[in-house]
Length: 102
Image 1 (cartoon, helix red, strand yellow):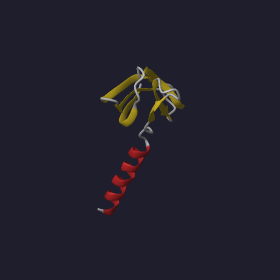
Image 2: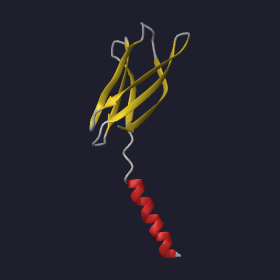
Image 3: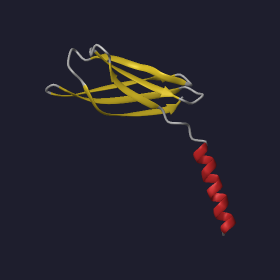
Image 4: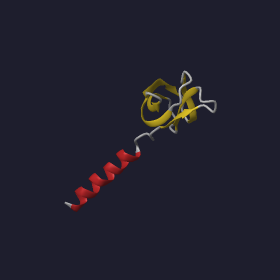
C-alpha cells in the first residue's frame, strides 16, 4: 500500500511540474494619465493566447478594459493593448488574466 501511495505521489509531482508557468499581467495608467496600458509576461518557451481584463474606478462610476492577443515566448512586459481614458482619472481596482498555449 505504501509503495502504491509513493508511486501516485511521484506521478502527481511530475504532472504538476509539467504545467506551464502562469503569465503575469499589469493594468497601468500612462504617465500623462491619458491611456490604460495592459502588459503581460510569458515566461514559457512557447507563445500563448492571452486575455486580460482590468477594472477601474473613475469619476462617476467604473470602467473596464479588456484585451486579447498572442504573446511571444519568453516575453516580459509585452504590451497587450493601450486604450484611451478619454481624459478621465482611472484608479485600478482589480483584474484577471487567462493565457493558453497556442
